[in-house]
Length: 164
Image (cartoon, rainbow, N blue to C red; front, side, top):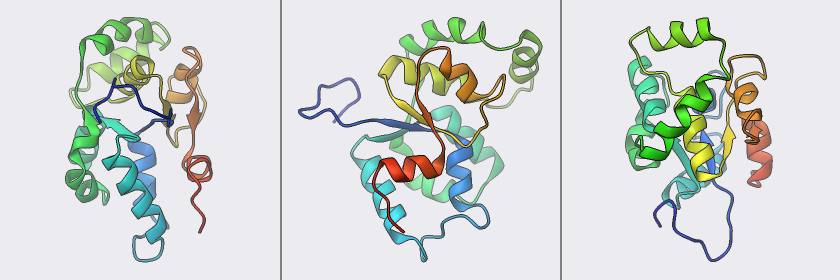
């Protein structure tokens, strides 16, 4: 099923940030051999377009070569490209960041997924999964200005019914 199509039964869609993806495998993390239920659920959700991320998140993880990179590479279809709706929303999102912070991040030259993930979430009415703290210039803080729900990794696992 493609994004934007109507679902017979409304299933929540989760957009996952690099911080949450990385923390799945960072020490102590949730190794596949110890927590197979988590990994099976994530795979199923990614295949069913219920767990999505942004191509800029993929680029951040690819650049850092985090442990989760191989899993992301195998599930690359879950990482969505920039579209017109996101481009339109980006200006609104920029106004919620402190100007100096925005300029520093955008002038670094590398990928910066946060505003794109927020834009994608606005456009697709999705819940963001992030392990960032709710502080100025961070995803939960900025997302709250757009009434976007954010969950940390543990709350996400609870919400999707992971038991371990």
